[in-house]
Image (cartoon, rainbow, N blue to C red; front, side, top):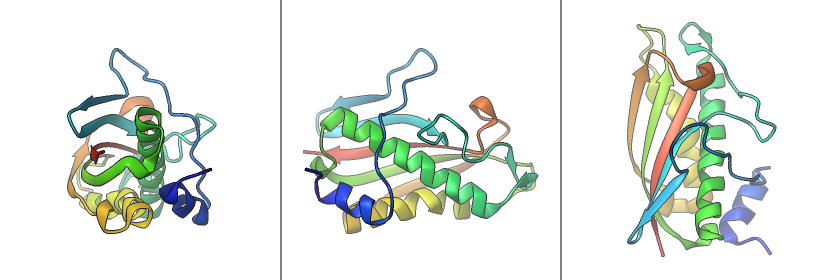
Length: 155
Protein backbone atom coordinates (compact mmCIF):
# COMPACT_ATOMS: atom_id res chain seq x y z
CA UNK A 1 0.00 0.00 0.00
CA UNK A 2 1.33 3.43 -0.97
CA UNK A 3 2.10 5.92 1.77
CA UNK A 4 0.57 9.35 2.22
CA UNK A 5 3.08 11.13 -0.03
CA UNK A 6 2.62 8.65 -2.86
CA UNK A 7 -1.16 9.02 -2.51
CA UNK A 8 -0.78 12.79 -2.90
CA UNK A 9 1.33 12.19 -6.00
CA UNK A 10 -1.25 9.76 -7.40
CA UNK A 11 -3.95 12.41 -6.94
CA UNK A 12 -1.88 14.52 -9.35
CA UNK A 13 -1.55 11.68 -11.83
CA UNK A 14 2.01 10.80 -10.85
CA UNK A 15 3.08 7.20 -10.29
CA UNK A 16 6.71 6.78 -9.37
CA UNK A 17 8.73 4.66 -11.77
CA UNK A 18 11.96 2.80 -11.12
CA UNK A 19 14.75 5.22 -10.25
CA UNK A 20 17.03 6.05 -13.18
CA UNK A 21 20.51 4.53 -13.09
CA UNK A 22 23.58 6.79 -13.11
CA UNK A 23 25.05 7.56 -16.52
CA UNK A 24 28.65 8.02 -15.27
CA UNK A 25 30.92 7.24 -12.30
CA UNK A 26 28.76 8.36 -9.37
CA UNK A 27 26.06 6.99 -7.11
CA UNK A 28 22.45 8.21 -7.31
CA UNK A 29 22.28 9.14 -3.62
CA UNK A 30 24.31 9.25 -0.43
CA UNK A 31 22.88 9.12 3.06
CA UNK A 32 24.90 10.54 5.92
CA UNK A 33 23.21 10.77 9.30
CA UNK A 34 19.72 12.11 8.76
CA UNK A 35 20.49 13.76 5.40
CA UNK A 36 19.95 12.21 1.98
CA UNK A 37 21.80 13.86 -0.91
CA UNK A 38 20.36 12.96 -4.31
CA UNK A 39 22.50 13.41 -7.41
CA UNK A 40 21.26 15.64 -10.19
CA UNK A 41 18.38 14.19 -12.17
CA UNK A 42 17.81 15.27 -15.76
CA UNK A 43 14.35 15.55 -17.25
CA UNK A 44 13.90 12.01 -18.58
CA UNK A 45 10.38 10.61 -18.55
CA UNK A 46 9.77 6.99 -17.39
CA UNK A 47 10.48 5.73 -20.94
CA UNK A 48 13.89 7.44 -20.97
CA UNK A 49 12.87 10.24 -23.34
CA UNK A 50 13.72 13.85 -22.55
CA UNK A 51 10.69 15.90 -21.52
CA UNK A 52 12.36 19.02 -22.94
CA UNK A 53 15.55 19.21 -24.98
CA UNK A 54 17.58 22.31 -25.74
CA UNK A 55 17.97 25.78 -24.31
CA UNK A 56 15.50 27.94 -22.46
CA UNK A 57 15.25 31.25 -24.26
CA UNK A 58 16.28 29.63 -27.55
CA UNK A 59 13.50 27.26 -28.52
CA UNK A 60 12.31 25.84 -25.17
CA UNK A 61 9.46 27.78 -23.52
CA UNK A 62 9.21 28.57 -19.81
CA UNK A 63 6.17 26.26 -19.63
CA UNK A 64 8.05 23.36 -21.24
CA UNK A 65 11.00 24.05 -18.96
CA UNK A 66 8.76 23.97 -15.89
CA UNK A 67 7.31 20.64 -17.06
CA UNK A 68 10.87 19.36 -17.44
CA UNK A 69 11.74 20.55 -13.91
CA UNK A 70 8.67 18.72 -12.62
CA UNK A 71 9.93 15.59 -14.38
CA UNK A 72 13.31 16.04 -12.68
CA UNK A 73 11.49 16.27 -9.34
CA UNK A 74 9.65 13.01 -10.05
CA UNK A 75 13.04 11.40 -10.75
CA UNK A 76 14.39 12.83 -7.49
CA UNK A 77 11.48 11.30 -5.60
CA UNK A 78 12.04 7.96 -7.34
CA UNK A 79 15.63 8.06 -6.03
CA UNK A 80 14.43 8.98 -2.53
CA UNK A 81 12.04 6.02 -2.59
CA UNK A 82 14.86 3.74 -3.76
CA UNK A 83 17.01 4.97 -0.86
CA UNK A 84 14.36 4.83 1.89
CA UNK A 85 11.67 2.46 0.63
CA UNK A 86 8.95 4.94 1.66
CA UNK A 87 8.60 8.66 0.89
CA UNK A 88 6.81 9.12 4.22
CA UNK A 89 10.27 8.84 5.85
CA UNK A 90 11.12 12.29 4.48
CA UNK A 91 11.09 14.75 7.37
CA UNK A 92 11.77 17.79 5.18
CA UNK A 93 12.87 18.79 1.71
CA UNK A 94 15.93 20.85 2.67
CA UNK A 95 17.24 22.17 -0.64
CA UNK A 96 16.88 21.90 -4.39
CA UNK A 97 19.57 22.94 -6.82
CA UNK A 98 18.45 23.58 -10.37
CA UNK A 99 20.51 23.83 -13.52
CA UNK A 100 18.78 25.42 -16.50
CA UNK A 101 20.22 24.91 -19.98
CA UNK A 102 19.94 28.56 -20.98
CA UNK A 103 20.61 31.00 -23.76
CA UNK A 104 23.00 33.69 -22.46
CA UNK A 105 20.23 36.28 -22.10
CA UNK A 106 17.62 33.97 -20.47
CA UNK A 107 16.72 35.40 -17.04
CA UNK A 108 13.67 33.36 -15.99
CA UNK A 109 15.39 30.27 -14.57
CA UNK A 110 13.54 30.64 -11.24
CA UNK A 111 10.20 30.39 -13.06
CA UNK A 112 11.38 27.18 -14.69
CA UNK A 113 12.54 25.62 -11.42
CA UNK A 114 9.13 26.33 -9.88
CA UNK A 115 8.03 23.17 -11.70
CA UNK A 116 10.16 21.14 -9.27
CA UNK A 117 9.47 23.28 -6.20
CA UNK A 118 5.72 23.23 -6.72
CA UNK A 119 5.73 19.42 -6.89
CA UNK A 120 7.66 19.14 -3.62
CA UNK A 121 5.16 21.38 -1.84
CA UNK A 122 2.22 19.51 -3.38
CA UNK A 123 3.67 16.16 -2.27
CA UNK A 124 4.94 17.08 1.19
CA UNK A 125 2.96 20.18 2.18
CA UNK A 126 4.92 22.57 4.39
CA UNK A 127 7.66 19.92 4.75
CA UNK A 128 8.24 20.40 1.03
CA UNK A 129 9.18 24.10 1.31
CA UNK A 130 12.91 24.32 0.78
CA UNK A 131 15.94 26.49 0.17
CA UNK A 132 16.88 26.68 -3.49
CA UNK A 133 19.48 27.72 -6.01
CA UNK A 134 18.82 28.17 -9.72
CA UNK A 135 21.74 28.49 -12.12
CA UNK A 136 21.73 29.01 -15.86
CA UNK A 137 24.30 26.81 -17.60
CA UNK A 138 25.73 26.55 -21.12
CA UNK A 139 24.84 22.86 -21.53
CA UNK A 140 23.55 19.76 -19.74
CA UNK A 141 23.96 16.02 -20.42
CA UNK A 142 22.02 14.82 -23.48
CA UNK A 143 21.09 18.48 -24.16
CA UNK A 144 18.47 18.19 -21.41
CA UNK A 145 16.70 21.47 -20.69
CA UNK A 146 16.81 21.03 -16.89
CA UNK A 147 18.63 19.10 -14.16
CA UNK A 148 17.70 19.17 -10.47
CA UNK A 149 19.52 17.85 -7.38
CA UNK A 150 18.15 17.65 -3.86
CA UNK A 151 18.91 17.34 -0.17
CA UNK A 152 16.32 15.73 2.13
CA UNK A 153 16.14 15.34 5.90
CA UNK A 154 15.05 11.78 6.58
CA UNK A 155 13.95 9.64 9.52
